[in-house]
Figure (tube, one colour):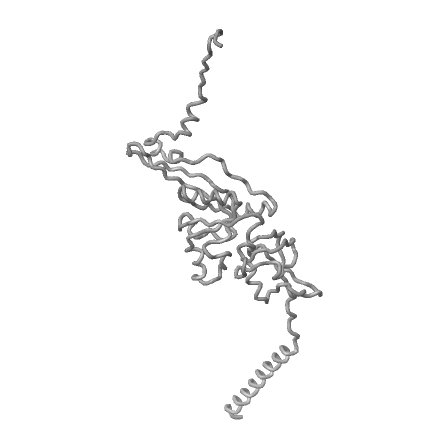
Length: 292
């Protein structure tokens, strides 16, 4: 038999074998039942949420529902509302593990969002910041901060000494409810231009008591206000019903407390001088026994 004929026969058998393997694979794939879809999951609260809580991603968890399925109003993974929940404010108390519905929250683009974000009886007051006093734009809505006032007092004496500088904590552990016009923490996966709105803000709105709102108004005229960011873990571990620590020692920090140069060129402030001089001496004069 001619070699060429043998090669042709071998090629035909090879192609037939290859076709058989392909057809068998297609048959097996078509006869295999598709994988069942994942069970539906709904959004629930990871912990107890009080009224006015600004939702963060760690406040929310997914919970798979069984045969009962998804109830009306509950938020599922494929719902566009799921992506909007971080940054919304809680409208009514939500227990741990309870499903969250659209009626339970107020979204940032809804009318009255700022009023809903305030705790009952509290007020919103804004302070001016810059890139330094506002923590380089890293302070976001929902964070808790201390408000620090720095005084720059000019010496009216000879003028050969540097100005006196002192700082004090005006408010401790207050909640940030807005940075500029941004009312919720931006999505970390958002485009850079969206992230820059909060970073370039020139005001921060704080949640304070009516009395503290008056204190902030006065402090803004006395000197420069700065924000000191507090640990979110400490604030969250206290729970929504716990009282915030005061952290107000009442003692200002003077320039001489942090700088040896200032201590060499400035006299001790009056408050320090009184403390250093010890208790005041009182001399009592008595009249004669015959005085009427």
